[in-house]
Amino acid sequence: MTEPIWVALIVAMQGVVVALISKVTIDARRTKRSTEAVKEQVANSHVLPNGEPYNLRDNIDHNQSAVLGEIRGIRRDIGRLDQRDIERGREMRELHVKIDELGTADRGAADRLTNIEDTLDLRKDRP
Image (cartoon, rainbow, N blue to C red; front, side, top):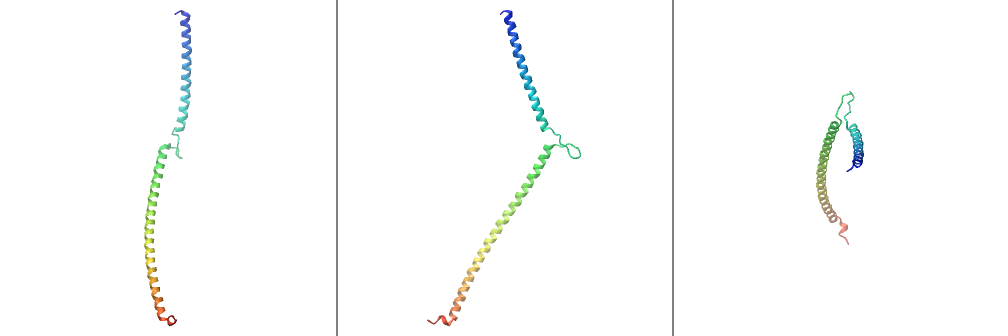
């Protein structure tokens, strides 16, 4: 190859290398800005009223555990109330059965009293 061809190839390669370096530099800057924005969002800059720093994530985890514990307690209470409702329902059914039995017994007594009254009423014997 002649010298002008080599010069043209070297200049072309320099252009490609400069373009690649520019692209990599732009991408690196963009990534750096994105990373800084993410760090700003997740950085632990939370402080207590007295100025002492604390970890927000640990605080959230603690609060979540406390809330879940309360929810479990509420579910247990609801389960107990549900069991009490079941027991009360059973008691009410038993009372209904007893009331029905007493009602049947009362109807039988009422029928007997009616029969006794009918036998004592002399007007019923007459045609």
